[in-house]
Amino acid sequence: KIIINLNVNFSTEILSAGWYKGKNFWSFNIGLRTDIGANLTKNMFTFLNEMETVEENWRNSNYDISGQQLNINAYTEIGLGLSRQINSRLTVGARVKALLGIGNMELKLNRVAMSANLPSDQQINQWSSESYWNSMTPSQAAQAAQELKDKFNNYHANLTVGAELKSSFKGLELQEEEGKDYVTDFDFDSGKLGIAGYGFGIDLGASYKILDNLTVSASVLDLGFISWSKSSTKIASANPDPIDIKGSTYANMVDPNNPNTVMNAVNQLQNDAQGYMDRVTNGDVLDYDMLQLEVSDAKESRKSRLASTLVLGAEYGFFNNKLAVGVLSTTRFVQPDALTELTFSANYRPKSWFNVALSYSAIQSAGKSFGLGLKLGPLFVGTDYMFLGKNSNSVNGFVGVSIPLGGRKASKEG
Image (cartoon, rainbow, N blue to C red):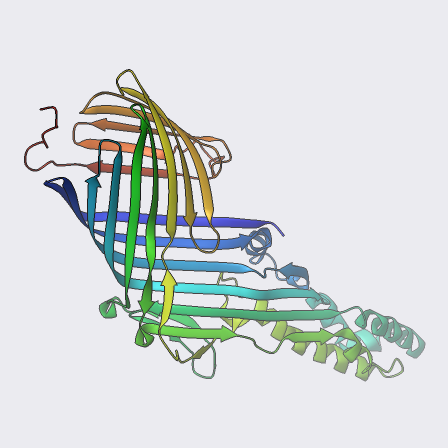
């Protein structure tokens, strides 16, 4: 089974500041973070592509879209950081963060499989018509009924569903239509938006100059968790009775010498098959009627971990450190699966107000992506994964402005 991993990460700094106090550099930030991850199989894209085609396709279909997963985590972070140069070679730093949970959702389609071989509407209408059988002699009708009975044994329709949903959002309601005991819609009331949970996070990092022009570094970012309140948590699961239509059931109803039994069997098959068709042909990506998620009360609060990141790097400088080359390994422990990247870079920094960097990322972009960064005074723009058309597997960009406050920290030599 071909698995396609999708990850989207948004990070917005609302406010950030930094200042020196003695030998320490302090920093403060308030930011918004959203991490979205999904595991999708190739079968899912085939299913979505064909689900709105003519209905007859569903009468002769075979889809297995089990194993899909979606994770969403959104929160505000308030961080306080400290960096200290221990000596001329070693610098260490840490940041502690208070986390205000906006929302979290986890959806798993553990088992969703369907297959069918059913007669067309045209065939159903023909076989259930009295005029069709009356147009034949008794011997012809008996022969046609026997042939139809043999066909019935090959007909079938099966649907099996197993899914679970865990959601912690203030203002999110899982609605049920009157007469239905499962979720039929999601309703979000922005007026009820609020803090759905609280958490804690920490960043740790260090850099060490092995040689005057060779520096190595390591950091672990976003170690932490968010605890989501019981009152904001909704739990829903789906294990409805499977649909299991067997053609032999209708074949046993047929007496070849009695056309009425054929018409009764055909009508019964049509009625039962319509229930299957109603479940699978709604046309929505999240088909409530097919899944039939039933809401249950959350018995306790739930926790979600942050998408932690491990970063290892090395940089070698030339020409009094105006030109440098480096390598960076990044592993993000996102949901559902971790992502690893290896990036090579070259940096040219002739002046403190002018820097330019070029990078090449080898893994997530399938070796087809370059990055470019530029610092011009207080403005910096760049991309880790430059968009190169439809063959780009990953795209990333950033832009920012840095406004210094106060004087420059004096060097030891000054």
